[in-house]
Length: 399
Image (cartoon, rainbow, N blue to C red; front, side):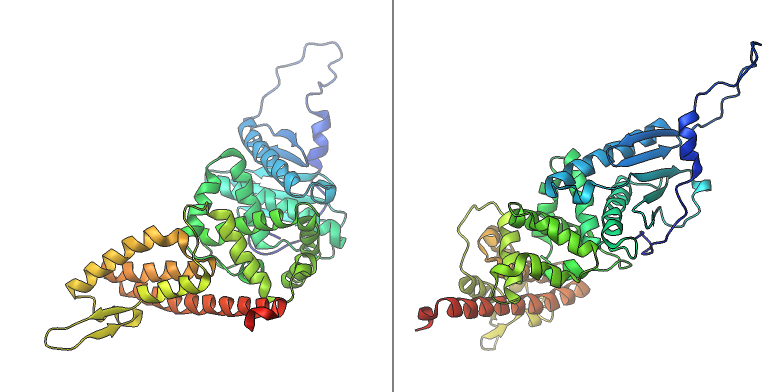
């Protein structure tokens, strides 16, 4: 798997690694004084960091990559304590100068049938910390997949790679989790199926990365005692369909597949929110959002008119409407922690529609209006499905 979306089989690791064993050997001089040796401008430097063997043009680069490798391995061992992920042949990492990196992508992963994995990284000012973390994470999960499939194919889900990137970052930046929590609260929570099946080659924002990070933490929490995350990652590395793997590993407690979506929505809300006020039941949250989305105006010389979100752009010039939108945005900020998880996305998209009207941004308003209709419908569906499940489990509730 590479950043460009391709995986290739490569020849065995370049022979210059064998040269590491003879570095520093002095030539035979027959007792005569040898002439001063000409020192090259740059001499390769090697270092071992757990499962990674890193070779680069200078000590600084190798040290930086070694620190990232250590952080990645330490965090992954906490998530998957067995040798499933961190057992296998050494992963070789080559930091290449731009003129010796014949690839357009900033890093390229090569997988061998015997489990050997090499990672070629273009080492220049364009390499960011995020790319370095991603390269090592992709290499680590590539090795897992090669070991599981015998080299026949490689499967590294994008969400796993991005989650590992941010889990590694969190090792050195203690506030990174708080940052990703705020990202999720300010954007939408993706459906679990969307996260698991997201493919490469599509430009994605930080909202996907934050969802991937929190999904990994959620699955880790839900399966820590029984090693479920370990089992799930192995199934994915073998190429099993994400939905099938998730149901097989975590789905035993559910009667319906739709319950998995509810399980995720409620669980991630529990992870990112620190309760400061009681959360409203789903039906009351829905009624509250429906009330916030409805406006009553009285044009001069006319009777009262009711406006919905779809009517706001046409009525945007009314001063009274603008003041009411500002007031409701303040209220929504205060009430945000009390909205049920099923309607978190609807609450967010409604606020975005209000703000777009105030900003005079029609394009943003149209996007938010469509999102609002989708999100509120998704919340209603989850609420209906929950009711149906409860009636099956507890038939006396419907009597």
